[in-house]
Structure formats: structure tokens, C-alpha cells
Length: 239
Image (cartoon, rainbow, N blue to C red; front, side, top):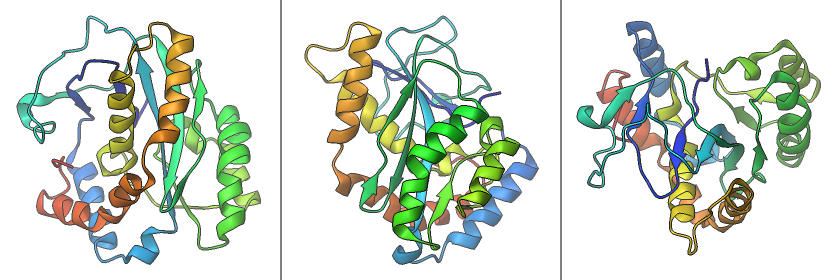
């Protein structure tokens, strides 16, 4: 099961794929939101939010494409609960933090625990931990590769503190909005990418071109997000 992955179609915008939430999921999401609702900007500035996302050039028969007005993405009629993601393209990983971001990692294969350790942690996350010191917090979701034993051992050996994260909660992660920004920037390119190598170059270029202040605003909006999750009792929100 791939948890926390988003699928973006260049030039098209599909329904948001919410993961099904049980009463336990909602309770844990609500508890997390209450715990972090009063965090200060200084506390949020120590958190690196990370995630994988998938970008492809083609649609597939299982995906529903819709036109929607801004702000309606999470309305019930625009939401489809799905567990799995399909289509050909690139899997990307990125991390955002107040004032900076990681390089974008792009790969054609599924993420594994070994790739996550050797590439993501060793080549990207470790550098930020070294620069920021012990206050650094690393947020990733509960996807199986992220919780492999070799990953836990690497986090311990590098003294990287992981942020507690409720299961099935990609909508709590501000980087989801960055993936939307990235997809829209690629869709707006003229000419648009027409093959996978062109899509890869576009992903790398546009990731660097996203204004940092837009990323910072997303991170600094986390207190508002927490209040929205509290108001919804841990269910999906418009954020």
C-alpha cells in the first residue's frame, strides 16, 4: 500500500484521493492537531516536511478528471477514497523547511527502505540535520519504506529526530500544496513536456523555481490548519 502519495496529471487536475479514515484515525489526527495548535513559528521552523509524489503524462481508466472552482478540492463531490495509485511517470521526493528546501529526488522505481536510507536520508536529510543541530525535526509519513528497520537504525545513528505523525494524513502535510504548485507550473510550460525525459527535466527546473516565500507561508499556516482539523474532529478539511 502506498500511503501519502499524490498523483498529478500534467495539464489536468483530478479529484483529490483521500485515504479512508476510521474513528481511530480521526482520533489520532485530532490529538496531533491539539498538540501542535499552539506551536510558535520558531518551533515550526525546525520541522522538515517531506513526502513522495507521482507525476505522469498520461491518465488511466481509473482516474476521474473534473473541473472545479478554486477552494472546492475537498468538497465531498470532488473526493474519491482510494488506496492505490497508478500510471507511468516519475516518483519524486522532496523536503521543505522554513527558508529552504532539499533538492528534488526523481526516480522511476518504487521507493524501498534501502533507497530511502541510502539516498533520501544520507544524501538529503542528514545535511539539514548537520546544519540545524539537535532542534531539527524530520517529518515523514508512515509508509512502509519509511519505517523499515534499516531506516530506523539510520535515523538513530545520525541522531535525526522524527516527528510523530498520525497515519493516513497526507492532507496534514503542507508539502501537498507544493506538489500542486509544481504540477501547475509544469502544466503551464510552453511547450509542455511530451516524454518522460522532458518531464524529469521540467520537474527539476520547476521545483527550484517555486518561490521560497510561498513555501514559507504554507509552513507558517500550520496553526490555522490545526484549528481546522480540530473543528472537523480530525476528518478531512479544505486545506
